Image 1 (spheres, rainbow, N blue to C red):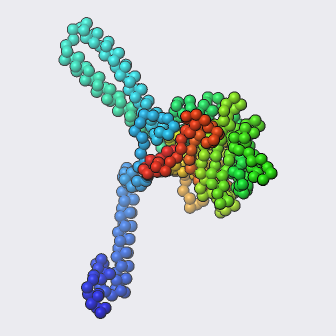
Image 2: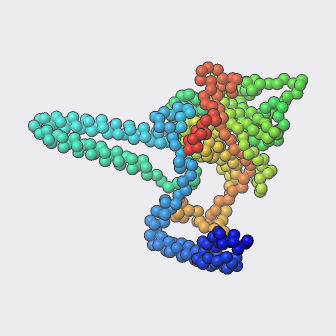
Image 3: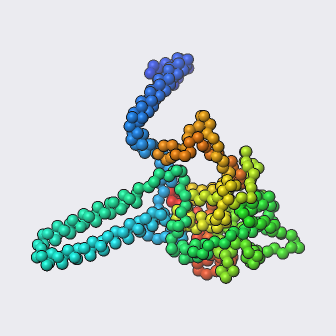
Length: 430
């Protein structure tokens, strides 16, 4: 029976150069083929390395071809000329396009003035119609050449020292966003942040809330009691209490299954300005500092702040909201860095301490984006130590006033996340 079954189907070693039903023979053939393939691959790799050493342009072309086609590279934008809150547009690209249009219109106007002067000269000199037509064609060609030069200059960019991240430029904030949220994007200098941190009712995450409060300088944590004989203060009452005592921001941390699950940021503003806006985030993957292997201990220095990947008007609003929580003048002697990295609408929160040390013999020098060594940093390496805590935030809603209950008017709800927004996986809101 066994011989009949084996005769009715191809052997498992049919893909090898020599077909055989002997298991030991198949194993030996597989080892030989693997050695040959590895040898061919290594020879090809060394040959390519020798050719690229002679001609560096070949290496650049190969790296351009071998780039991974990630979802970020497939990201799509709304085809609208609108920079209002909720529009999925790249603010930097939109501003660049508007500048190009303004330069092109100014060039056309300048060409129109010169054309009028030339036509008057031609009329006075009795120029022919054919010469006028040829002049118009030449002007059109000049306009096209000028536009091509402008596009080429806009496309040129200096190589970034960190090509994997995109720093957020808050100077690109659109005028519509600055008018709508004057408290955050006003020309007046920001007040020194003073943060009040509390929790939801019946919360038990006091240690986690204290750890989150320790991230922000000049912050205070106050327990929110839910005793049956105590008064259960609402968020609006707490915001009024905090504003009268000079606080600029109110944090309310929600709890689910004894873990932080929600973060509400209420901007209290000045004395004569109504509180708002309120940004509500969900918290995922919260890890306290003690659960991180080899974590460091924080100090009282003001940390540096890194905001990466916020491109849309909504993203700039979230970035500016986080920007106001930290002092504008960090203390570099503390070597502490707080990073908020946005990727696919998830904001990854990390806190590190960095140190500069001498490079080991086995370590290479720091290189730029094009692979050349950076001048002045020979023999120096940077080390990171995570301080914690670690968490991932996702923006859910933006309210005009103090949360959903404290916002009034038709424009009370500025933006809200909906499940249908994630049907198109290449479209992101931040």
